[in-house]
Length: 364
Image (tube, rainbow, N blue to C red; front, side, top):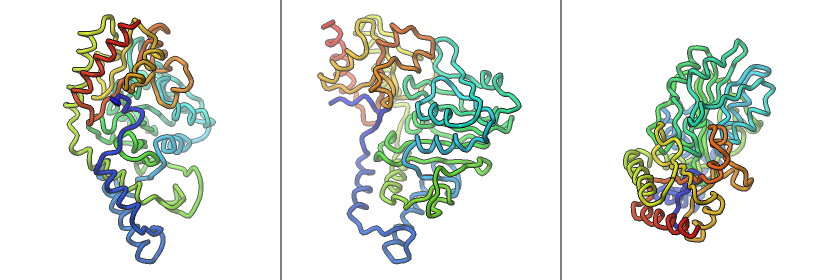
């Protein structure tokens, strides 16, 4: 199987797997226990948390380890002052959309300029009112790879004393990360950076008034009760450590090679957001000859894994809300597939994928 769906989930990194499995074989006590197995677990947990925080350049007291980005985003968004105003975009992941709708706040849903893959700081500034308390934005779009000008938006939020919630799932592990200043909450999922499923984190600044989703035994500064998973937290820390060796330019070169080979071998392909800043690993491509669902099934039968959009929406058989809200026609949207690479993707796999795509489309 040629796996080109790394924005849905990634293969566990061998070193991450080794660390994780070795801990599963150990006698790890509850980190809250006073005996030696418990204290050993506590020290592993402290060290892992410090390692994660080094990536974000924050103090360990500003890290909440979660089950993933959905929990992190929900926690951050529901911390918005009640009956205030939230600015977000029509391009956001379902985790953001559903959490925003759970608040009692008025919501402004910004859409990008026609054909563009991200909203701008100028659009956000025009939407700010005296009641605005929070901006929620994805750093990079999970379907097109389009990059938001995060630093400009963070600066704007800082100037207006707004809370900023950043969905960093599609950015971290695909581009160099720099944590923005201000009252910020950063959310991510481990399984998008070659860690196991079931672990993620929320990193927040001291000025962000984070509220717990549920109570418990007082773990994690009283903001997320429940016994911490030492093995998963250490695995996440190892996955972050592995990012130090990633060469994003090499992934980008391979992605660009893939797109050029598509243009050379398949007529009338359209690459969405091709001329916008994008993360290194994503190609969202429309094929004029075939609808996306049909092509996706043909690729699967030929042992190539791609996607029709967000994995969380794949069962809905509905057109991508991202491409639709970019102003693209239904005809184009239905013929679009997402290919997402990782640092483990090879040039040989890309060449084989292009050949398989071409043969699938010739059959049409």
